[in-house]
Amino acid sequence: MAWSMAVACGHPDVCGVRANPSILRGLRRGAETLDAMRVLGLRADPRPQTSEVFLLGYPNLGLAAIENAREPFTGDPSGLHHTYAEDGDGDVATCDGDLRQRLDGRHAPLTADAIARDFDALVALAQPTDVYTHAVFDGHPDHAAVGRLLAAALERSRLTGRFHATIMHPEGTAKCMGPSAREWPNPPEWEAEPLARFTPALDVTAPPLPPCTEGARPGGWGAAGPPDELVEVPPTMQDGDLERNLKWRVIARYPSQIDCGRDSSGRVHPSCGYMRAFVKRHEFFWTRPFGSGTAPGAGTVLVVGAHPDDEALGFAGIIAAARAAGRRVVVAVVTNGDSTSP
Image (cartoon, rainbow, N blue to C red; front, side, top):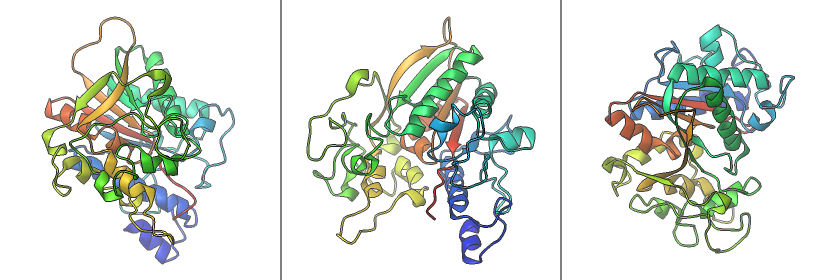
């Protein structure tokens, strides 16, 4: 792959700067999203008006700061201080796949105004009647920020429809996402080996409470109460064979996020079971209307994830079912998922 070759060869020109492991990781993860969405029949197009997949290109773990930043945020691990994304041309020297670059021919600064403009543009392009994204009480700060930013953009748009929110990290787990991934979604590692957490016949149960505490604990959904919407995934995502199961085939397109290696103590990385545990019979949501008046009929479905793989973990069933019903589906990923590790 191009980003791996750049590291191996000491490539001096990645996104216009000397090769940076964080940038290369961001490009790799963006490419994984494009690949995974192709499995579900969605295509990225350089022309925003006809594209079904968008990469906004903001930095990992930076959204909560950026959504309030009057001056450009400079804590991005890439060091570029602007958006960038995989553009699908096979050349790591160019990183022109981010939405603002596609729209205006320039990258967006990392400011509150810029990210609000990008969310407004995304909503205007999609014109959705159903929106699927993260709940504002998700434990990951990027996820919570996406929920807030998207809700604000929908309010500004004056569109009418339904907002469907889910969680991938239980409320209150921002400081313990690794340990939390070992115990939720169910079954937890104390009940099943990581590879056995692939359970397409089961439904997700409430996460253990209180968060960031060790040992088996009773489950609970917190102040929001249980989700009010369960959407059964297509039969191909309920297949008990790992190699045939469509949802797992989509999730498996994110190899950078699936590590089944063992550490020095012999324990498997949390991601190994965590990613498998999202293959469930239903996807679950907390819902509410947005806009005023009666929601229109079955229009465009907009799915917005914070990081490359979120769109598969929480919404692959929604995407497949909506496409099967003949609805237009637009998927957007807000961050590159980049980091300081290769």
